[in-house]
Length: 105
Figure 1 (cartoon, helix red, strand yellow):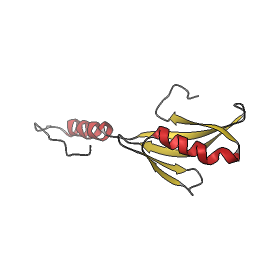
Figure 2 (figure 1 turned 180 degrees about the horizontal axis):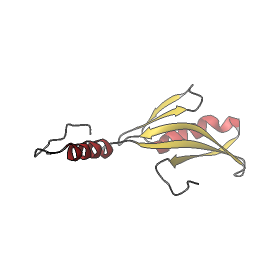
Figure 3 (figure 1 turned 90 degrees about the vertical axis):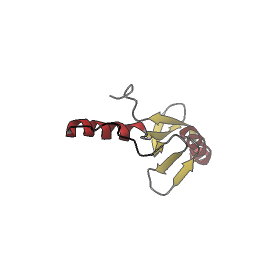
Figure 4 (figure 1 turned 180 degrees about the vertical axis):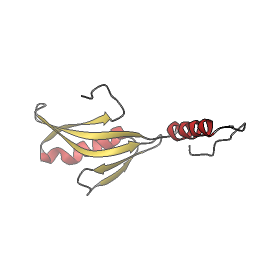
């Protein structure tokens, strides 16, 4: 991950090189996600934090900006958010992958 890519041949044009740059950037890009809290019996929800999932870890920041978490995965971060928010009436927490357009309005 993040190793320099070898350019086997001269790309020839700016457009081809730009495409190569774009491909390299997307190849190892982290996946954005949100940790969403569920209150009651699906009565109310609240985004608790946003994060980036890398191949080997996940990093999350609370929406208030007062809490930052490094975790083994997005799912592990979700579990930690759920445990820490139980006293606030949170029934459950969910990982929502932000690149997933299935549920967009």
